[in-house]
Image (cartoon, rainbow, N blue to C red; front, side, top):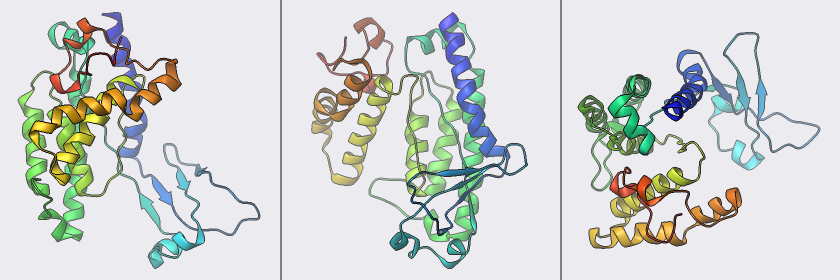
Length: 258
C-alpha cells in the first residue's frame, strides 16, 4: 500500500506542470533573433508573473523563412497541455480494489474537458478538420464522444482512454509524450503497441500478423536498447506473476523479460 501511495504522489507531481499549462497562459516564442553566438538550446524566459514563462525555440534560417508572417514578427504560440493516465500494473490492481483512484479519474476528466475545448476552438477556425478521416478512423467529434464514453464507463485499467486520446492528438497534429515511472518498461509496451496499431490503421497490417509484429518489436526492437542503456540488461523488468495483472496487449513475449 505504501507503493500505491508513492505512485499516487508521483502522478500528483507529474500533473503539477501540466496544470500550470492548463490554467495559466504559456507560450512558445519562435521569433528568430540574430545572435552573436550559436545555440541549439531552448531558451526559457520567466516574466514577473507566477506560473508564466516563454520558451524561445532557435530555428535555422531556412526553417524560419517558412513561418507565417505573424510568427516571424514575434507572435507567441499558446501551448495547451493535457495529461491522461491509466495504471496497468499490479499496484493499479490493488488501488482499484482496495485503494483510491480518484486522482487519476479527476485528471483524466479535466484533461478530456480541456481537450474538447481546444478541439472545439480548432474546428471553429478549421471546419474541415472535423470531418477529416484517415482509413478506419472516426471523425474528430466522434473521437471526442468516444473518449467521453470510455471515461464514463469506469472500467478497470481502461487503456482505451489512452488509445483514443492518442488518436485525437494525431488528428489535430499535436505533440505527445508517453512515459511510465521508469520511462523504459511499461513505456516500451505502450510505444510498441501504438506502432503496431498505426501499422494496422495506416499501412494495412493484417490482424493475423499483428501479434507477431508486436512481439518482434518487443523482442528485437530499439526499446531493448533503451533498457540496456538504463540498467545494463536487455530484459524488461517484469516478472511472470506481475504480467498476469497487465492487460493482454501490454505483455512482452517470453524471453524478453526477467
